[in-house]
Amino acid sequence: MQKLLIVDDEGSIRNSLRFTLEDNYQIYTAGDQVSAVAIVNEEDIAIVLLDLKLGEDDGVEVLKEIKALKPEVITIMMTAYGTIESSVEAIKSGAFYYVTKPINSEELLLLLKRAEEYIHLNSKIRYLDRHIQQKNSRYNIVGSSKKVKEIFYLIDKVKDIDSNILITGESGTGKELVARAIHFEGKRKDKPFHVINCSAMPANLLESELFGFKKGSFTGAFEDRKGIIELSQGGSLFLDEIGDMEVSLQTKLLRVIQEKEIRPIGASTGITVDIRFISATSRDLKEETLLNRFRKDLFYRLNVIHIPMPPLRERKEDIAKLVEFFIKKYNEAFSKNLRGITGKALETLERYKFEGNVRELENIIERAVALTQNDFIDQEDLPEDLSRVENIVKSSKGFIPVHIGESMKEIEQKVMEANLEYFKGNRKKTSEALGMSERALRYKIKEYNL
Image (cartoon, rainbow, N blue to C red):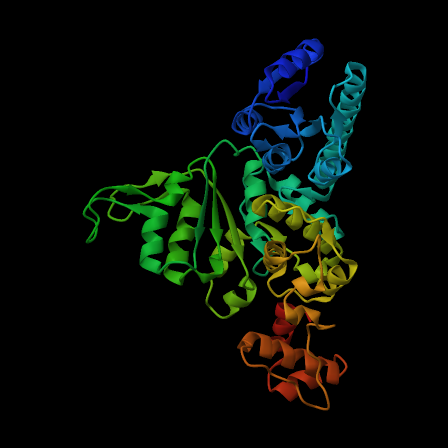
């Protein structure tokens, strides 16, 4: 039975309507704005019958407050005045319909039946919308491109096995989302999941965070403290940016993986651990091993199963779905009601080379939703540099433009790309022109996806 709220400052009208409707609805009543809003806030009200003139209160203002609180509530206005102006204002403010006093019971019941049909239809639309969203996103990873489907396939395959997993990809591609999906969808989901960023702290602090320590083992160790590896017992430990871990710590981590045992700093005995290591990096660990910056034996221990995350520029067909997802997310966060994005603005986003990947796109949409005064995100709501037809600056007459504020990495990428284009992809001539080995050039081509 649907919950229906009658809001009228006259008790006789409230009682009369209650008598008429109580066989079909669970009835609530209120005689003023404060009581009405409180009931809507506390109860799962489906329909409100609201008087347009509510004593000292304005019914339209009450309607606006109800809609701001719960937009899905169906509100039917009641008025003894029946002017076109007041009715139009009520409809513009979100009223479903209006009835004039004295109220005809048969007319009201027919209108309420239409309202229920509307509620049912809206419920079906929301269900279908959720179903479509689920088809276009799993594990909070939005997309339906071939590359994203490959990620879903790998998650399904590895979530219930104990092998160590290495997730690689550029910053902002969603490596932690994949790690969380593997843990929380798998057999270890009821056990701990911990995250530690290996680039966020110096080696000595990272060691104590990972392994824990005994009281008195160093200055400031006033009590025993468990490390994050021990705290992850039975579950998964996500080592983000593992490529930034110092070699001395890599050796200790290798020993933990091989022996399944940790020894806290200052301890005389070890502790057996059962955890799955999920690691992630934006570095090329194979190249790091060649440069002796990452232990080869640790790399092979971590890289039992490899999940490469594609950059957004390699799955541009997912941009429209991601934009829709982020508009809904920030509509809710900012209590806004944007209806979408214009074709021109979407085309601009699809041409843009997202160096920051999905994270950069999310930031752009968050800013646009927060600042726009329009119903749709338009070209003017996007950052100015996105308006360029191409984000990659091509060489012109032998010159490669460099702009103030560009990083050395961005400049290097432009130089590589311009020279490869000039020599028509010939790596030997390109490497000679740049004064580097073909092998080094291959690594750079892979790094920049050229």
